[in-house]
Image 1 (cartoon, helix red, strand yellow):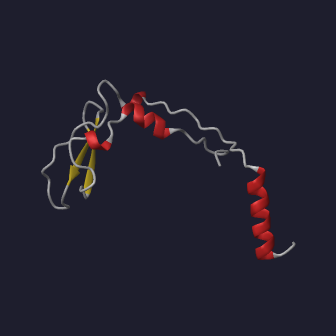
Image 2 (cartoon, one colour; image 1 turned 90 degrees about the vertical axis):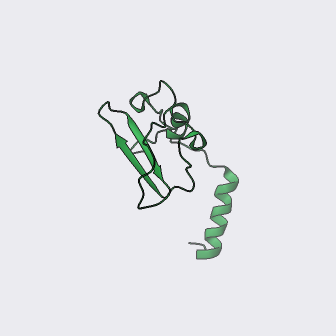
Image 3 (cartoon, helix red, strand yellow; image 1 turned 180 degrees about the vertical axis):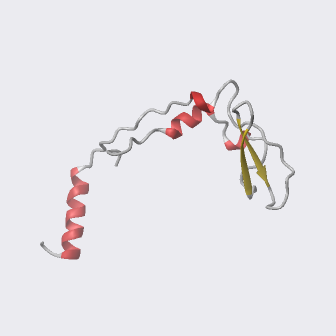
Length: 102
């Protein structure tokens, strides 16, 4: 994992730039439809709708004040995750019990 394509830490970067869903201008959980709009000033806005056939909400930015999506620069995550020796032994026993010695 992470050999051909680098795995980036978008979770940490989004916490720095995006508002948490509870602070958005609409209720996130009951919304059934989301519209993502790019306006003429290159600002991405989100509009949430409670019903599929309604258009009551207003699109607004979900970024924190003075933050832009273009300024997000996620760092790559480390690719080597150490595996404990006990885990290797447990998996070997499981495979041996299921498939036999070979």
